[in-house]
Amino acid sequence: MRKFFAMALLLSPLFAVAKVPVVASFSIVADITREIGGDQVEVQSLVGPDQDAHVFQPAPADVKKLAAAKVFVVSGLGFEGWMPRMSRAASFKGLTVTAGAKVKPLAAAEEGHHEGDGHDHGSIDPHAWHNPQNVMLYVDAIADGLSKADPAGAGYFHQRADAYKAKLKALDGWAAQQFAAVPLAKRKVLTSHEAFGYLAARYQIRFMAPQGISTEAEASAKAVARLIQQVKKEQVKAVFFENMADKRLLQQLSNEAGVKVGGKLYADALSSDGKAGNYLQLFRSNVETLLSAMR
Image (cartoon, rainbow, N blue to C red; front, side):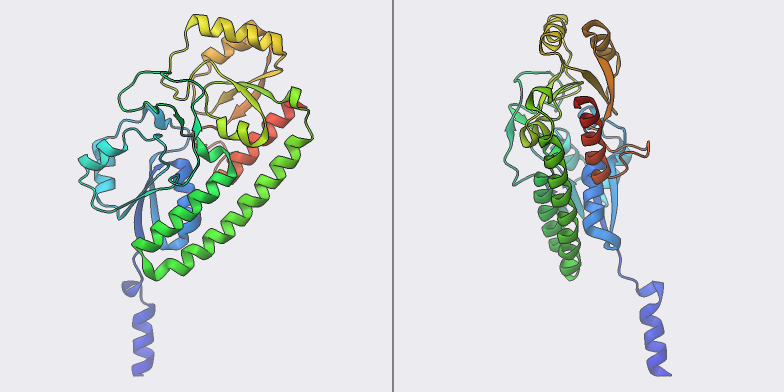
């Protein structure tokens, strides 16, 4: 009876191991963290699906959320310009994990692309997650961070990390094979802002955009006119909208340059539309959408 009673106590919810409270900066990083943390973490995202992290302004509820967390996961590379200010406001005493700390950053397509409060990325392109090989580095950093916060779960986190990296490796190989079948001359894309530099570099695609690295950028009439001429000259076939961007400028480009709308791309956020509910879906959807227009 004593053994039975002791076992019943151990199995009781009262004795369940508490999940590690984690706050992630935006939806993509939150999803990767959930994949690694599994049922040992409780992840909340400050910037949700279909929301723009470039223009995020923390509310008091967000500050309170971070103050209660044990781990704060960010992408880094200057993407979350508001992050240091928010950490100070929340008096955050936990562990900050910079997922992209070991990513080799690409230079931004242009410097001085916009002015804004805390959102200037300087000369670095922060959108590293558009190369699955970089996401593998994210996975290692997050697994190490969660293990530091919860040493008892280290084996569990690293096991899940290895399984997720295998999926990323397979996805990267598939994308490389698909793009390799498209002639270089056809790998040209017109989209909202310069968010796909890492995808372009990995698979040799040329992206053109009226805005800079941040969606806060204001495209000048001169820049738009120049881009229209370039699109016509290079015979770009399609323009792509982003799930969290203003469509009006691209609609203008589509009309004036005489190119069709090729579909929706997911740049800085997951989506609730069923096509990009997690990172793996987001990446596959982007590749398939691009390929359908290039072909």
